Structures are given as C-alpha cells and as structure tokens.
Amino acid sequence: MRERLQAELAEATAELKAHMASWEYAFAMGSSCHGGQNHSVHRETRASTERLEARCRDLRARLAEHEL
Image 1 (cartoon, rainbow, N blue to C red):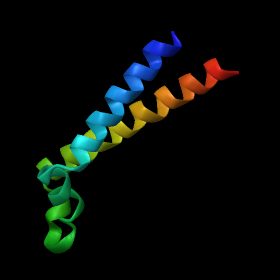
Image 2: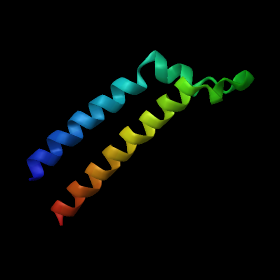
Image 3: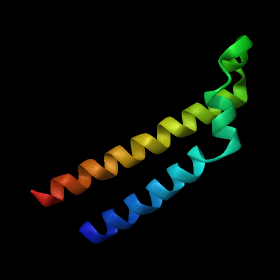
C-alpha cells in the first residue's frame, strides 16, 4: 500500500510541476491586470492547479497515516 501511494504521489507531483511550468499556468497566474483574471480559460487553469495541489496534499496525508 505504501509503495503504491508513493508512486501515486510521485506521479501527481510530476504532473503538478509540469502544469506549473506551462505557459497556460504562467498566463493564468499573471493575468490579473486589465480584468484578464476572470477569463474562462484562466479560471479553468486555476481550478486545475487547485485540484492537482489538493491531490498531492491528500496523498501526502495518506502516506503520513501509514508512517504511524
């Protein structure tokens, strides 16, 4: 179980890093000027970021439970 969680966390972390290195992410995070922040593409990018971060947090918490 622990090995599977570690593998899932490694995969999720890699996915989050790739997402955060994308132009899509850069534009979404830097688009607050002139009302661009509310663009539907940027909202979806931010939502994807939040989902990926939540997945990594959840996997870290589940791994911590197995260390006890």
